[in-house]
Length: 117
Image 1 (tube, one colour):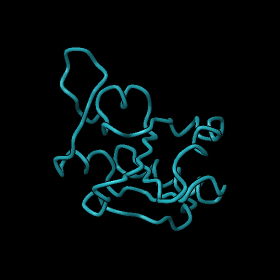
Image 2: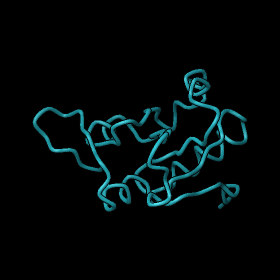
Image 3: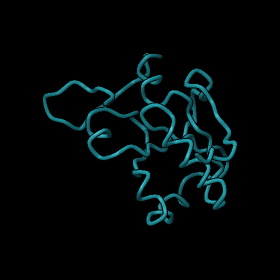
């Protein structure tokens, strides 16, 4: 198994309280179930095709990349950094940690409480 290159990583507790740029790379069903209110959603498999949208993200601060538990976001952050798209930082523990830390969640499913799948 090939290990991904070293990726800058931050825990949910280390994320900035203001000016946070969060990129969620989970699948559509995971996003719909529950996500951070201000996050941008681009599933991992769509990153190369949607790189133009990512170039619009602020370039004066890191883009924190999140998935369910930190694996997909680590791969995404490594790719984004290697491609020079943004200054990406993986969020350790992903949305599971986000939820555990009591951070806000919103969902897209009518009549269902937001949750992390």
